[in-house]
Image (cartoon, rainbow, N blue to C red; front, side, top):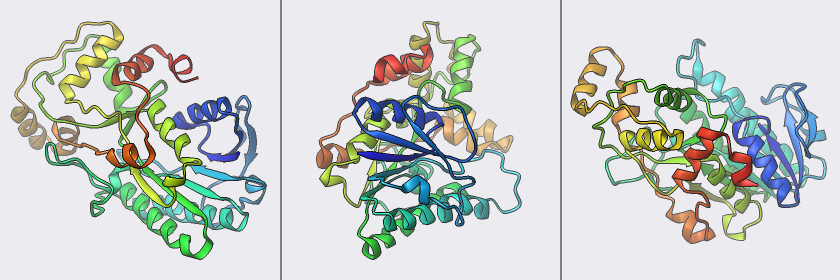
Length: 318
């Protein structure tokens, strides 16, 4: 098949390109500006992604579109109207691409959404499911949900098949932001007051996410479905840090500060969101992908963290 990937130069996109090529697919990457070429990938420049983007050259002879590009979640957004900015790319840009893809004869459109469409946290051992009522809590999550709803409206109008995948936090070689900072802190042996956290959170290794995406390219049961994805093994913050230490071959320095004390201290400092990420639950039920697609994560958490720590993604995945 000939596949168009947006966001191909990003964290997930690079791994996806390599895996698709190994499976014999032809790959075209739509990029916003001139960038270094990706091996075995045809590059097409489309400029900024919004409601006015012309996708005609990028969509020529394409069978499947995998839409990774997005305005991503921003921890400290300084724009006056964050939701409007997210909508420009994540809603208007996505639906513009989808409409043009349908007119160009694209058979299937795979949209990488976010677990934030479901919400920010779960009760212990009550994971999110695809059938749950959407409950996005921030501008990023709202924009992803609105894009999903727009895509579902396109279905009866065009007949193009749509697949939506909602990942939780993605990790792997090249991961940035909080996950990268956490691993650096563990590697440096910085004492962390997180040795007594008893929450449960779902994560997904980039190799596992890519595996599900490639499964959805031509699986007949994936048509017009929403899938949640994870590694299939939830971890507490304490367990995650300990597992990172093993992957890094260092001794974890975790202080057993009571979870309640951390939550109270964070509240006093106005850092409730930080405490929620460290102490709260966010679990994902991926039973639907297992049963409907017969898909299971090919990589364990241990393999994923080892690859993240040592930069072994290419050797693990390809």
